[in-house]
Length: 278
Length: 294
Image (cartoon, each protein chain N blue to C red):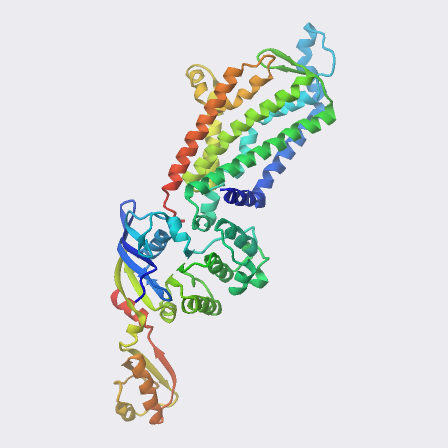
């Protein structure tokens, strides 16, 4: 299996689209940092004006922590859109290129090959998330400095400076699980549809519909929310409250893991029974 | 006779409700090249895909050294496949592609040696995306040779190749059978190529084995032979040639029906009468047979 995994990682590293995702993330985060450096102060003064009438606010509110938190908020829907460029093509790309025949004419079993692909996808997601995390935190700290994190999240939350980084790491780890789930959805579509564009669109379709229903969040849709994977993915926000509800965060994590297990199972079953006619 | 290295028994395959392969059975023997022929949609590629495990047969069995194959990996440990194309990772060089496959297949071959064998040494560092069709076909043969398999399956290896590359590949395949005693199955639409290359043939029609046999056996059957002469030959002299009854298609071209051995004798006789043919055309044996029955 290690050999297969090494090969899959090598193939990922040699694909231009892999580097495209890192390039896109760099551009997005650079734009956020640039925008904040140029107009951040004005924007925050406007947002904080009602608060400053009731509270005496002292210290550096617009700091690297806040910018990182805002970037995370802005990008949690964009990250899957970028990731799917790679993960949606993972299996279907081999069907389209015809290389699937080469890869399956070996002594490895099909499930081993697909498992290696899925693990490679998770490793790619992990590296991408670490890269994004570093890019969210480091430049923001260099440009805006450090300080306590004050956010409006289920009320005003003040998280002390020394705690923020560990919360950020926890949020990124939870976010990683969410991205694993989305990567699994896209690999599943990649196996079933055998066409990269269709797999990418289908995965994005699921993401958009799920996010819309979650955002609407009223009436019947409210009761649907716990069924939506995006709702569970968004639970990383609960880490940024003074006293995080660990139980509810772990429950969401379990739901995401369940999604991964079921979708991987379906993908493996389907792939094992496929007639490779490409 | 040595037993079959690999044997297909009563294979059936359907796609949806359509029967693609209908009770196909045959075997491959060491040192022999078998041609799998048939019109488009006859089921040639499907048979090869079943052998490669890309498609699972609905029923039937595959035997390797007389033992039923329960795991397709058993076949892959002894067989090399060249299935339609084949396609490679375009953003990698030929050497990188083979290195990748060498790792996946746990092979021990020297990649440069393999590339040299198929005449790709000078293009080893070139990205496969920039390869011509002929170069890709050669690389396809090279990848099939990884792990030094005793069985080789080539699906349409001569498709779209210029005559020079085709001859080169044919020579490689011929040597693999004759010098290395490999059991080879080749499919192609170009029947004259297979006639030159193969020992036996299997003709598929509507998914069934319609006819099979020995290509050398055909050579004992009479075929249409056309002789072209520089000077208009005297009909009386042609009439004296013991073998064959000549009919003129035009004053310079005369047809008759002869076996391969009889053709040699007829040429000797003609030369003896001072009639030296500058051209002798023989209808492709396999093609003639194919057209006769399809």
